Every structure is written in C-alpha cells, then in structure tokens.
Image (cartoon, rainbow, N blue to C red; front, side):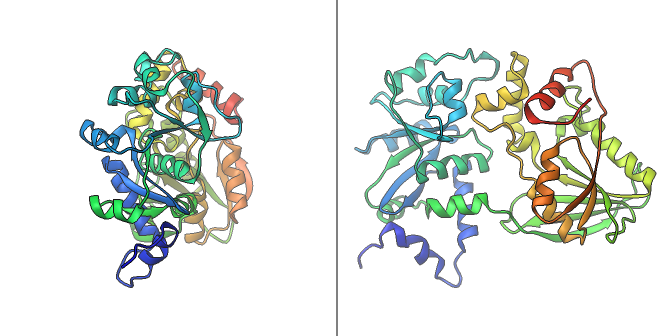
Length: 387
C-alpha cells in the first residue's frame, strides 16, 4: 500500500472512531516534546523531526545528526536578540542552519542563558555551531509549531529541526508521533472550553461561606479554580478577581512581587462586601511555568527587570491566557463583573469575550523595598495602572 502524503496524514488519523481526535493528538505530541522524545511535524509536502533542545540527550542528538539532512536551530526573536543576533524584524520565530560541529553544549548555550551567568554576548560554544555570521530565515509553520509545543510544555522555547523526506516512514520506523504543524498551531492557540468537574464548601479565614469549583479544560490540561466568597448574585455585577497562581508569593510570602498581598486583599474586599468570585488560574510565572520563573528570577538577581528576564529566556513579556477567565465566568452564569485589577489587559480580554466589565476596582497593595523595581516595570512596560 502506498504511503499517504503528509498533507493527508492528519485526516487519516482522525478518521478512526476509536482513535484520538486532533486535540488529543496534539496533547500526546506535547507530552512527547516535554519528555525529550522527537516528533514528526508536517506542512504540505514538507516534514521534519522536531525535538525541544532542553530535553535533548546526547544519544538522541547523535542519532538525529546521523541523517544527511541539514539541521536547523529554531528560536524566538527575543532569544535571538539576547544572543546578539540581528533577527528579522517581523518574525516572532526564526531558524538558522547549523554547522557540522553540532554538539549538546553548543545547543544548550544557544538555548539557556544559564541564569545570572549570562553576559549578553554569544557564548563560544554556541558560536562554533552556527557559523559566522549565521543566516537566519523567518520561521515556517513547522518552526512555529515547534516553538509553540516547547512553550506549551513549559520548556525553554528552542528546538532542533531535521528535515525528512518520508514523514510516515520516519514516524513508523521510530515509533514517533506524527501530526500536521497547522493542527498544532490551531489547537495551541485556541480558546479552551472549561468544564466543571467538582465543587465543595470551603470555610475560609476570609469568609465562612466559601465554595471551590474545579474546572478542567477540554484538552485535558491543567485545572483552574473558581472560589466563591459569600453568595454572589449572577444577576448583578459580581466582584471578581482573576488571579494567576504564584507559588512564591501566594504560599511562601515572597517580597519580590505583590501577588500574595493582592490575593489576600481581594479575598478581604469580597468578604467586606459580602460576596465575590476569585478565579485562581494555574498560569505560574506569567504562563512560563515554575522552572522558567526561577530562571527568570536568577536573571533578575543579575540586574534584568522582569520583562527583560522573560525575553532573555525567549518568552514574550506575558504568556498568560486570560480567555480562561471569561470561560470560567460564563460557566458560572456570570456575565457582568466589577474587576479587581490594575491590569487593563484583563479588562479588554474579558470584554472581548462576552463579559461586561462595569467597573475596574484598583488593587494597590503589597509594595516592598524588594519589589519596587518590579512594580515600576509593570507600570512602565506592561501598562499596569499604579499610582
């Protein structure tokens, strides 16, 4: 039987009634990427083996480099700028060819600023594998999908891409997942439906009448929580806080941010008014995950502000998805809110997704000597409304 062309692979894989749909297959691929297992991505007649650099082992690198194809290193424009490379002005993702001397140390030097040791110059180990000067191209769909998968897996956004001629044969030979790049990009950029899973009463220090609702996204990803304080009336504007998880601030009482005080103040304000809803969104570190957040903290200790630190790692200023908040509110039957926030982006996104924000309620608490610069950066670079 003749092999299907890559363009029809996705259609064929989705046709089996017992098989996983597109969303499930993208999540499988993301799981493999997080484990350091290569996947095969296709776009039209193009196909490539793709692996996130952070999870790449020396043995797998040797196997990948044993092919005759020209390997490509894929990174974001932010990481390219941190390496001193002149990225293409309109490309968010760029790719460059590698020399014959590719080794794991060189790839890691291109990918990871090694926390506070990063000097802003091209590491020698990295320069030796990209040539001088390196030739960069704007990322194609396979490149963009590779970066999207790495980010979604909360790995550093950098990937090794090895073109292959026969996607089906390559995937079959090595038992690898095979998927179209456009399916990856579509699924990972989609607003996810949030389904209620369970709920129970939770008396809290802020208010004895509390209740926690757990929601699970339709891609099977991490769950998010809606905490009712008192008895909010969905027929009137509800006092709401969209709060992104911050282990260091919420749990450990970090003085580097204002997250913990904002969480406590929001709950106290809702208790004083008799009702409210706290949406606790599991998007640690502005959506980059705890491991990358600690990398960013180390860069901040070396003198970078919070935005610069995220960019040095290759991430955007803020990778969070506040569409989750509108989905949770809709699931609770809440269509109108008074939003506790200093961040106008939250207001805009809720309104764009069907939630009326009738009032923005400022939440200016938690300033410390240690986080004064952090708060100033939020105001200057992220548009937060702080006095």
